[in-house]
Image 1: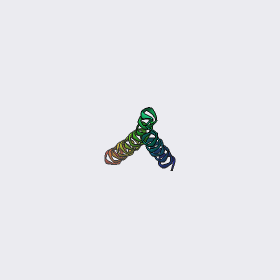
Image 2: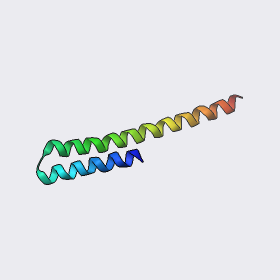
Image 3: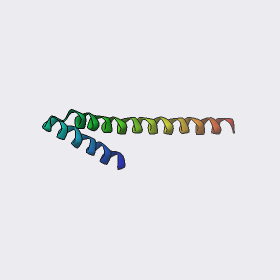
Image 4: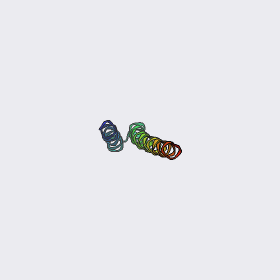
Length: 61
């Protein structure tokens, strides 16, 4: 849920920056959203790696 809130905050910043013409705020919003995407990707890769590790452990036991 935390990622969803961070993504929503980033989207709000981006829109507010676009509406007000504040380029830095818009860029911060886009950056915040990208951080959430990266964090999700890293978590996904970590889970897959753990699954592979567990599978290999079972195969060698």
